[in-house]
Image (cartoon, rainbow, N blue to C red; front, side, top):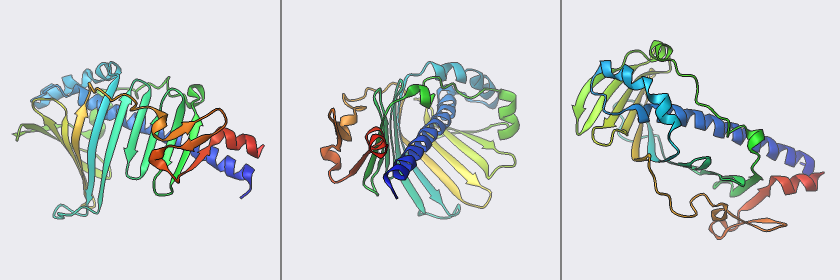
Length: 255
């Protein structure tokens, strides 16, 4: 592959990563809207009132730190998951840091960095918020009637081990049942259990769900991944022997 085609592919990959970031933000937005709204709704009739306050509460949130374990089982009787990965999401205003399996992503004021730990490759690009259209992101439209028409009415199943249990049936979907477990004291998710029509089920267990996190200095610093000079970007000491692909520099070389 010649230099021009390689850079074109890398830029397409970066654009796809930006799209994935936007999609991730939408999914996270919906999740956070639900979580922030779960202020100890103890009965089914209260659930509708809780939903009405979600959008406003989400828009007021600036930071979050989530650590969760995602496991997928072949069937309800399986004790060992065939898929088991840890996910960590850190958000502070418009800065993000994300780790899932062998993939890292960092977005701060200056850079968008994608890391593939298996391929030992770091793709780095300077931020272009206007092109990314991330700063103008708005949560999806909120319509309680349409939400209930798709998910069905939630059932309050009771309280066990200091967690409130809600069950939601999905209509005409791959997932036919979702069980939500909300910590009775902290009012945040403890676990989400998805049951699929083919018998599989997935469990998301929240190890950390902090909506008022105190991040360590440097959490969103690109120097964890790369060191930049006026002429070059190299891997940091944490990622020695990784290949760094600088979209801007390589694009100039190709041209």
